[in-house]
Image 1 (cartoon, each protein chain N blue to C red):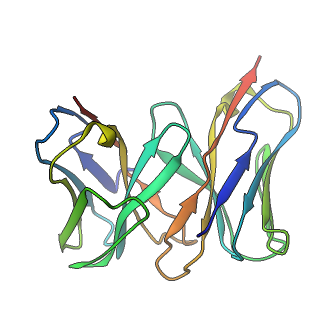
Image 2: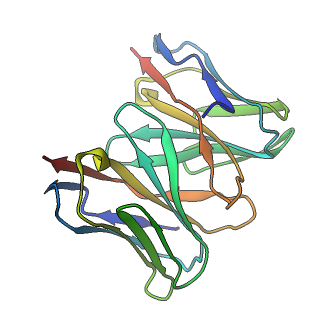
Length: 112
Length: 112
């Protein structure tokens, strides 16, 4: 969706290194979310934010932290990347007109 | 803990045929969403179902919600190749924050 972008789109890193993924929206939505998508698991919520500096954990938050210092930016940090964090990461924003979420294009992260 | 199960996980069907994808969830909720994901792409919203008995239709797809049975269905009528994608249902248990739980997805392959 044009109103939400993610960077980088692809990243390869080594075990033990810190990684930060960025999500940027231009729609002024209050809520933002980070998910990871893995085969056989659908999408699983990592963290979400309900306002600037207001964040909470999702179901798979271990090993991840987030920050939201501005409405438009939601950062996901892997403090020390592990191979189990190899995944596709999606950012989303909401609520839209009917409470649905709009998703970003995704970031493919590979941890070697 | 909310569980959301979809079946089948994989569906291969011929063009022109009808079929139904099922989404069962474990905890009472009256908010359910359907998303579509094309290979290598992001998720896009298809339907938002916000009450018991809700029915939404778009082209060859029709979604319905039975909150008493904790079941939603996505019916495909006279399938065409362009409908090939992975379909996810997602249940919103907490209302205000749209903190949804996704099913594992149904990969639909429509064969010409």
